[in-house]
Length: 416
Image (cartoon, rainbow, N blue to C red; front, side, top):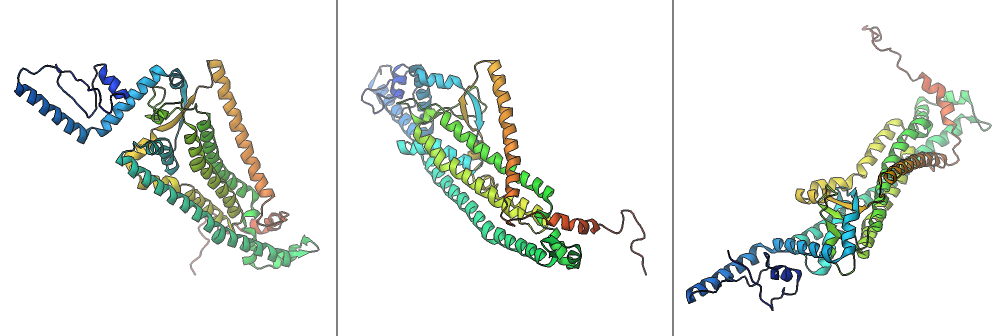
């Protein structure tokens, strides 16, 4: 059995890898592998030198990633053995918050993994390519969502507001007498005008409430998820002083994910907040408010349904870009990424109380969503000072809009 020795004076002699080798264990160092046995002859000595150079050349060409992984294993081992604070962080990391597999989730990987490697000067070629490409897609995603918001406001929402206001103004001009709706004047309006007026989204308040509730619920879910993850990121323990930033991610037995973020330095926390969480919440909030106004300005119920489907497509742009343009292996990496927070409860009773508290927060979120819908309808900007006089005026007209041929009736359309 051949053993491995490590020469003093090697660049890695004082590194964790050097200590590991001096203890007599295997090394992935690319320098000075020699045979421990004394050569019996000059030929044996020459053969040993040739073998050493061959191992060196093979290591230099094939084991850069393996060496990096091996060095990380050494860092983890030393940190847990020599740093009680870090060992305590690892032991307490139990609550898992998964990261979404989209452009924003990929950007979390960049902030937590690639940027620290870039600053430390240890980024491999793969990391540089990934950093550039994900950053490019992140900018495209941000621009696409911003452009969609702009054109929804200028080309869809504003014309919809104008058309709805024109219809409502004509209704007040032609069907009112002494500040009240006159039934005879309303009946005298053309069928087209009455159809346009009674088809307005604001003329069907119950239906528009349901659509708005679903739309607001979709965005509240985005906002809550983003806000929860931002709070979770800031509640993560700080990376202990002097430890390598690669130790912020770990493979834990308490999580099904391979890459678990258990602690962060302040640069990582601020980077996640400024680059990811805050922009994502701003986009979701603006899109929610803009979408509500556009939905309430719909000229008919069909447009209301189609507009809601179009809006749901807009908020999935980040997922679409990630699924189409990111490599599958990278998507698998992002899907295996998560925040692992310290445990809140020390016993089952406290855990039960914590779960009950989560139901209370969910109930408050539901009530807040319902309240937000009512506030939007009450203070809607589509028809300022709207007194909800359209539903009562259209009641008789809508009651007449029924098929005159009953289902399964066979004599509705005589031939001749």
